[in-house]
Image 1: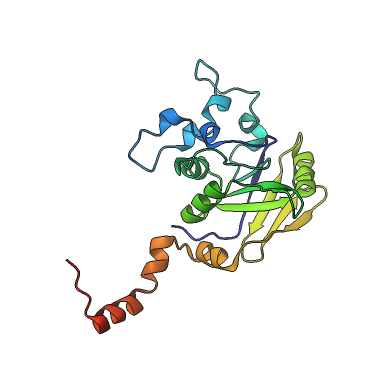
Image 2: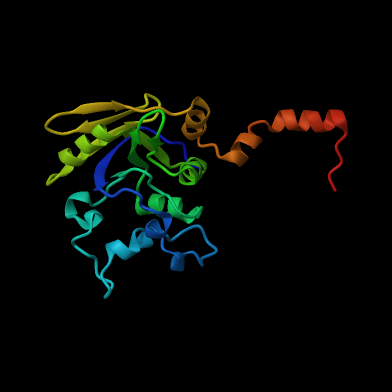
Length: 210
């Protein structure tokens, strides 16, 4: 897994809430036993016409969004099934970070991302960022009719939107997840980082492996 580094990229906006995993990567593309090649199928049903040509009405097909690496969407992004392919498709399209808003208050809060999608993202090195609804709406407005760029800095926990009016947004992330992403460690990588301690424990307790 590649470490998440500071980067600057084009912003693509998808002003839709409750984007589920079947829209992110439809079920007919889940037959592959490989973990590659899912980028062209991202948002397939929205992205293409029935004849296979790109639908110009779909947001990501806007020439202003070509080469985008930051996706800004509505709340509850990635709801639905637990398919890990959804994260792979987002990454293989070229997105390095996804931003979505939380809504509500402490008593009733709608998250920016479905829990399973968020955990799958962290496990594959995709940075998901929650901002407030007002902050995300500001980005939507700033992107309308123009090419917009942003710098994402995980170490500083900031998203800097560049434009006529530059704004810096702070985001929260748990320290353990931040450390894993900065160092490019998935669950296996974390285990291997303790290889010496594991070997010492096995030697001490004479662990027999069949």
